[in-house]
Length: 276
Length: 335
Image (cartoon, rainbow over all chains, first blue to last red; front, side, top):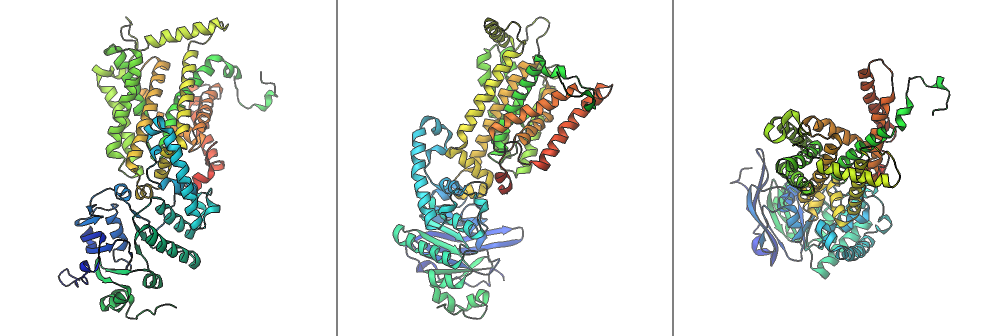
């Protein structure tokens, strides 16, 4: 597909009120391959937005670009009104835009509880000089953080494993730990790369409920990559579809499901039935 | 002193030298110096996940800066010590800034090369370092960097004699100071281990991308780790200079770093106290095997000593890969 022949995105900009995140014309080349080829999208504040598309569509690359792990060759990215293109991953995370990884990055040789407390922001004890001049501040923050961590572990059924090494957890438990850990950062915009993969349905439901609660109670915005169409269609407000490095559709679940370009590129000609 | 049946000993061994106090003092000082080097490596490799192979270079900076400042600029010995640590830190930052962005194995190569640069510069910058002659007291005693230390040492010996020890070894005061330094550095590092700062270091060791995704500036932490390690190596550099009463380029060959890594492997990763034990065992083995008289030619026996140390390390890897004090879980789960 040449650039000129590419279909125009389905008018995304005026559909999102009050965007918290906006990417415009983002391009990433690996050698001769354009993994992301002018992706443009907006994510509304407080929304749960799904990002779907066939394998190789550039979803994970796009995540890496907007969170600073890759440097984009072109395009602008803004989060909460400020440009974050070219910023370091840790800077972007501190602004409140936090991601998880498709292949979990549990800190294996550290206990689960340390995985959690590590993620908490504003710990003065993370600076060496504060350990000497303000040791009490570090300790009291540590107590707070520990309490929050235990509460979150409880939500994800990980309390019993708090002192186990993260490397001894099952794949699904690691996925939950990574999400719980991301929540410890108090994010405003959470990007989840296939959060449901490898999690049993009961826990998956719990996770989705927790997402809904965070959105309504704390106004957290979600953008998640997912292949489970039931989850995508039933639990998101908007669906953005990527194929061949660009956004080919963007709209409410029902609109996207009926979109011919999406059916051709991803859904495979057969319209999925909504699950009961 | 060895009361067993002598026919059970296949080798001709002179055990008496093992209890000789000069021998013990020498082994103790060497073990202490290498413990310091390896404590820095423990912080880097064991707790931050960076393979610093430039420890000999940082040690050289410490030793040379101390000697140059004391002899050539006439600065007080006490001032030259912290300044030489600062010099090692500065060099650590210089090396780390470009190379810590490299992948782990390339970082190891870059640090090894940086240490060789220091050594080769020391060999060739005649005016500054006295080249292959090294720093030592010349005939008219105008270039002694250790005058001050020798007077401190004499004072300590005086105290020991007052306590009723008639004839302490000349190097015993150095042993005391080295041991004290090892103890203080170990305690200081151990205190940082369970702090939030130490936790970020371990997170960087486990997966620096995960740490960055959680808002931690992994690069800054790696740089701090390297700088602290360089400063500790500089301390080891002073002690080596005082022990040998010279500062010489051949004292800082890459082998020094490799021995320090052997200490780390023996003691076990991610345990600071293990470093002390590892260093004691390594030097007891290396120096203790001097008593072996297997061959008429001492050079042959000397080669065998290293074979014994090598065999010990291989057996350790086979039966206790986590070292004496390392945690097996942390090692197995590490990747």
